[in-house]
Amino acid sequence: FNDKDFNFTYLEYQNLVFNPTQFQSNLVSVIAFHVYMILALDADSFAENGGDPYFKQAQTIANYSQQGNFKGWKLEDGLQSRFTLIDNVMSATFKEYRQVMNNYHRQGLDIMSENAKEGKEKIAAAIKLFQTMNSRRPNSFLQRTFFDAKADEIAQIFSGGPNVNIASLKEVLQKVAPMHSSKWQTIKY
View 1: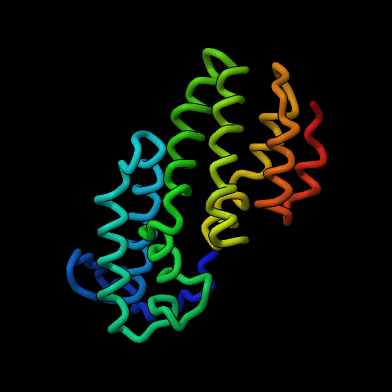
View 2: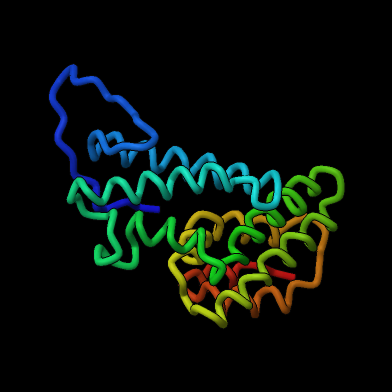
């Protein structure tokens, strides 16, 4: 996620104090928000909905940071803002995103060390979950952030090692992440 709405004022030697329930400064809020998002995404990759407490704290930070009148914290700040990011992650409309995060990492990548073929099959199944989300909200912000981070990795996973049938996966990838179609074309099966 490239946070383009990041403006702050900082005086040299100023203390950076984080208060989990109150806005202190935009610099502290943005850093804390992204730290909690990272912790939440990491926790989701270990257990289904494992990131809930971290996502809730990130949402709290987003809510109280709106009073600071800095861009990125409000609905009207656009479809690629911190507000939209946490709102989408917490929304049932995009529940497959969190399922994909868990299945891709826990059931896919973790298994690949012991059984590469089974791990690839689990990763393919996880990615296919995006079909449902894509039919509900095509080209969603969350989906784009996932594929911006994982497109190269996905292409590498399916371009070597034991062969799995990925014809349907390539079809899904072309539908849900067409902006990476050049990478999907490099996958040979």
